[in-house]
Amino acid sequence: MRQWFVVCLVFVYVQNVAQDTHYWTYRYGTKAVLMGGAAVGGLEDNTSVIYNPALLSRVKSTSISINSNAYQVVNITAKNGAGPGLDVVSSQFSAVPITVSGLIPKNKTSRFTFGYALIVPAEFTFKATAREYKNTNIVADAESAGDEAYVGQFSINTRLSENQGAFAMGYKLSEKFSVGLTTQFIYRSHNYTKNELCRMILNNAAATLVTTTESQSIEYTNLRFVPKLGLAFAGGNWSVGAALTFPSLNMGGSGTISRDISANNLLVSVQPNPNNPPAQSRTNNFSNMAVNAREAGLATIIQTPVSVSAGFTYLKDKWLVAASAEWFGSVGLYNIMNPPDNTFKRPANLQADGQKFLQVNASNKSVFNWAIGIEKTMSNRVSVSAGFRTNRSYFDRTFEERVVARGKRTLNDNALNLDISSWDIYHMVFGFTLNQERRDLSLGLTYSWADDGAIRQFANFDQPTESTFLLGQKQTTPARYYSFGVVLGYTLRVRSQN
Image (cartoon, rainbow, N blue to C red; front, side):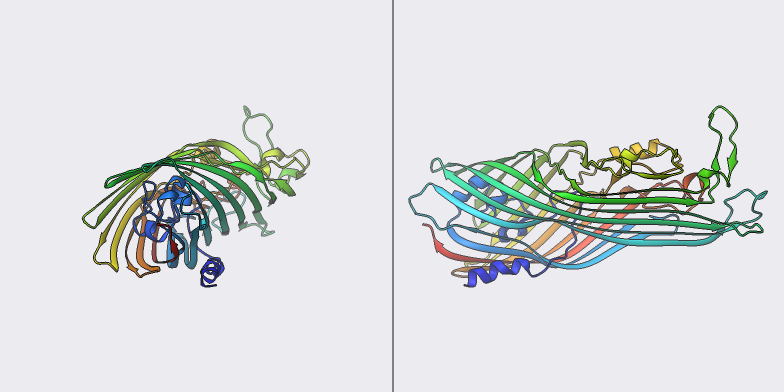
């Protein structure tokens, strides 16, 4: 009964902050977490199910373990993220168990070892809003003398969650060599909304109100299958391991996308020939425009790349040293959803790409991460650990650069991209483990930070123009990230396998 009580703890909390473009935000296993996740080479932990299934045959006891980021404070700041002096800030306080794992009791003479794990590989929440109200000169004085009253506002709210179930098998080839296979099923859900609104009032007799708006709402789910093969060798004080994770296989999912863009009394060009001088008008059909579309029940695809990991552990004189590294391949530009072109456009001959209007793009660049950890056994009951790991972003600027290459926009009919974080993160952890006869209790502190990342502004209310829908041109701006957390770990040993 006590075992199942521990298992149920994993469902107590449902809110946390990770990153949406990182593979190594979380590490798993009570021992592996306190050593930075350097576990591919062998830490005799249940979560070999996730790191390297070949190591399962070396785990010495049938047990169940749970580890949790009990408390975590995360701050993300995009300096001037909506224009000069308008920082975009998202701060979260959260609590989430990360993983529960265990081994299935087996016959002592069996060469097979089976294990399971339930983990949360991604849980990202970002909420932010910004508003600018000012008097600024946007329109020529011949039409509107002096500065116009202007207001711009945007909001963004995104929540990405992944839950993973894994079942693994390890097989002992000999006293030194073992192999293993993990089958992983990953369920992903994502909810994203973004809204922009800009208004100005002309200094004319009619006090003409000029308005532009854009709203986006995307929600989808997806289930994918990811197999992993592992190999391990142990000899003397050393153990080494390697694992190959295959590209994901899509198993299904559905999503809904809606988007709306409108403009009223906007000054636009009515000159069809780009070689002729521009002719602008505020009273033609295109000055009042609307584009709207919504599609539900769309099939979804999420692609994750091949990855190769390797690591080692070395144990001597009560010191344990471990290191791991993993290379992730790239994923080319693809569409999470491909909606049909049922776009509403007014005027009907408005130049807007209805096919791209609801597309959701994604792509991953190749990254390389590494981790190192140490553990010192202080006594039969207490050990102290420390670890460090990199966590590089797979954010691919292909989409962003393609949008920038379009230059000034007259209508934002680009495909959508939901990625936000683009900065590389570094994680440090320090803690200790109290060992008892049948249970271990671990406690640790974590600190994570990022170098100033270069991200494109969420919006820009500086120097708005009518040719850019009452927005300024988005620029690159620094982003700062830091996080503090407390880690708890608990392992209950059912019985020894020796």
